[in-house]
Image 1 (tube, rainbow, N blue to C red):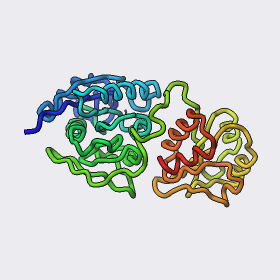
Image 2 (cartoon, rainbow, N blue to C red; image 1 turned 120 degrees about the horizontal axis):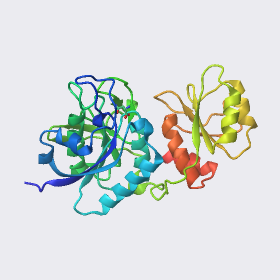
Image 3 (cartoon, protein in one colour; image 1 turned 90 degrees about the vertical axis):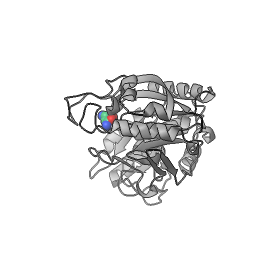
Image 4 (cartoon, rainbow, N blue to C red; image 1 turned 135 degrees about the horizontal axis):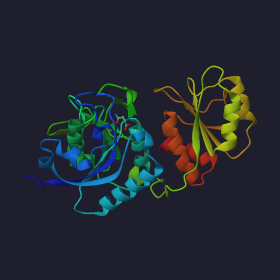
Length: 328
Ligand SMILES: NC(=O)C[C@H](N)C(=O)O
């Protein structure tokens, strides 16, 4: 029989560590339970792997920060260098799990499995989903097939790529998808089946895995709708290092917004993304004839924001950042 693996569990909070009125699925406080209690609530977990526990923070994921990302990066890279550890599981709130998964996928210099998971119902709810997700995440992190796959997310038996995972449901326990990119595979009980591999660069092959996550550039998102306020966009361009436009359709906007973009000649870098969950915002001669923007392709605005921050932090030119959006 194969030797038992050792998995490090890093807690950051979220509903998986949430407590509230007995049985209820809502009205709870996220990030309350210590990781040891979350882990001990999962029957049989210790039989899958030896576990070591770490806590970076205990927050609702809406309050996650680059300070926490920096700590997670340092810790995961220490664990990568520790020959006694085989893989890492990160527990996290679901609201911003997709941002954290994408960011870590770009900045961690690792090849060991790194799996992020969470829960839609707090630990005190009837049929809490955290224990099953945690069990599946540990199972995946202990599986050799997960090595070199970048940051993976596990939710409700499904395995997703950190780059592509999206929260698509605000209530169901089946809350994550990666839309037209399907799934990477499944985990259930003792069976791990990885079927697809993410194509884009990540982790040990990412040019961002040496980025110092302190003092990050400030990037905000301008959400487009009918009669969007062009004055608000002008203010943002004057105030931030970068702005991501969450455009309609393929990254589009009203003429008044286009006029502001075309008149802009400051340092603030502009990325054109789409507010839609599927499809791409590609370079476009109709909405951006003067080539003032960087196309985000399929990345949602909140993921595009993180990639832009990393490119700006590296001091990259507009052309280099455009290339980042083609390969990451
Ligand atoms: N299901 C959850 O984890 C939601 C919670 N608000 C969080 O993101 O921390």
